[in-house]
Image (cartoon, rainbow, N blue to C red; front, top):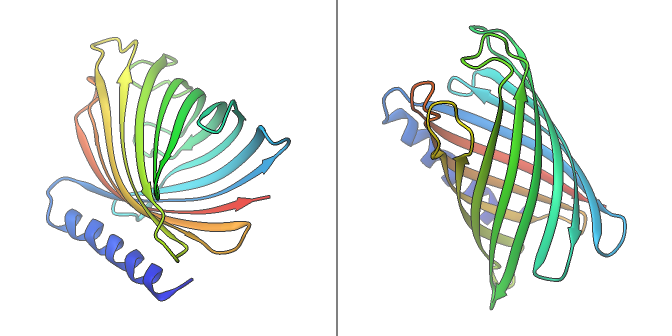
Length: 227
């Protein structure tokens, strides 16, 4: 891992922590994951990932997430996929819970010189067994709209990227609309032919029309293995 990548990691982490320290009633979180992906054919691939999320200024466990998925490449620009995610939520106030999430994706990707532009539309449905929730055993449906811009730095293994994503409620019992916004800046680095690392700084706002609005400042890391 080169010195430039390490310096950018420190800079992104500092900016996120600084934002939290200068904000009131916000939460700083840390999301860390490992993913493995392998190709079955030149068009079909499968993947799995494990993630741990920390909350309350990254001092307490928030979630364990396990996800399995599959992708099908229609052509060099279009991909479809599906996934299942099991989440263990650690909540001392309401009680621990399990969440089951099912997703279906359609993605478009284009290369413009050294820039990569991609958009993804996702339909997801989620079910929780938390009986103390505002709507116990209710199955929420969402559309997630995501756009990503990445740049391949010449003569370097580094690739900075920016993301924006919106969660749109489809069957909120109170009111539908955009319930969550995510804005992300990050950096990818290729370590070997099979291994890459990623770090990002994310600002997230959430308003589900049920509980109070919340804001999160997140530093995340991801180790990706391609077989």
